[in-house]
Length: 297
Image (cartoon, rainbow, N blue to C red; front, side, top):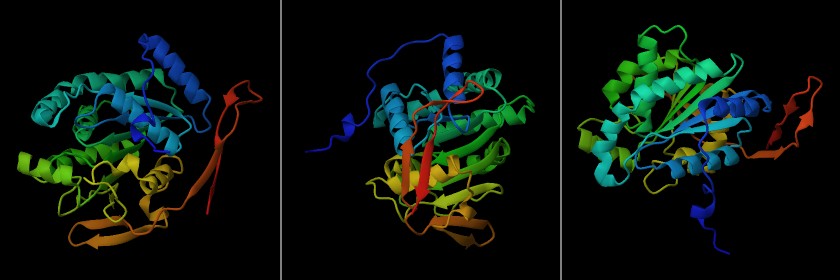
């Protein structure tokens, strides 16, 4: 039997919803989750709507993530030849994405734990949008539980400039980088500046865990490890579902970078997760609860 990865997840139906109905359904899913959490995924360059939804579905299943999941799809033009155009589209998408964040704030309860996982060029959209909300001193701006910046195709100088505002907007921020990221090496040549997700000198900011993934990455380009490598998914699980900082994850090795600070290297294989889904049960307060059990070997 040949496993066809393209058929692992697929979008079978798309149903447009009014905003009110969307948030009603989203809040119901959050209420049914044990940790009252939501995962917002923002894709990178050369990813269309169907692919972004499929990728999130795969991540949520393999992670596993038993809260609500939302894919935010900005209109990537697709194709390597449209890389520069996608950079312009990202800038044009900042206002709609900021409105989306404001809508989340207005429609979710204060108990909801909001997590963002963003990949590649999508980091420009998320970081620029979030930093503008913070720079505007918007006290009502949405606060995140976790922001996970995967392979950011963001110039090093820009990342250092707006990164502190992004860090201030979350309880915990993680930068996943890979020194062997061929896609970001090509981007560095095109943009004439190293990218934060694969720079020779790692970007280290106060309040952010910088994690080097080259040791366990097995992909050809070294760019999509965040969602395709089972060991990376186990590490991501400990961030999103266990709220563990890098210092708390036993497979991490700390490396001091002169004049900068500490970087973390995934130096051992993250532990195997064993889990199973429970059928929803009626709780004493009439709210359906669903969750999973996990054991670590």
